[in-house]
Length: 119
Picture 1 (spheres, rainbow, N blue to C red):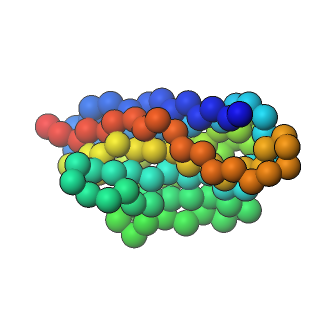
Picture 2 (tube, rainbow, N blue to C red; picture 1 turned 30 degrees about the vertical axis):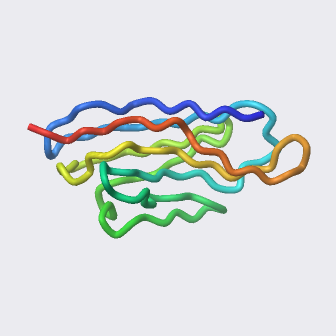
């Protein structure tokens, strides 16, 4: 079993910054990909960015403002969000695709953390 624990959400003014973190723990053999998605009220969940095999892809809407980084030793992924806009307001979800201690592939989601951008 694997747990994903997210932290770092909150209320921030437009133009401000926040950093989210997501730590994976449990029976992990290797992590294939870690990333972030978001879902605003009344909208579908969308990709923010994902990192895998040394490559990171971002949604066009966050390119140049958001940065994903990983600490492999801690099985943790971070999302640094700068120049935040009201339209970035959403629940942010961490996702990890990994190989468990049993050798099987798993796809886990975090519980979500709320980011609100408002003056």
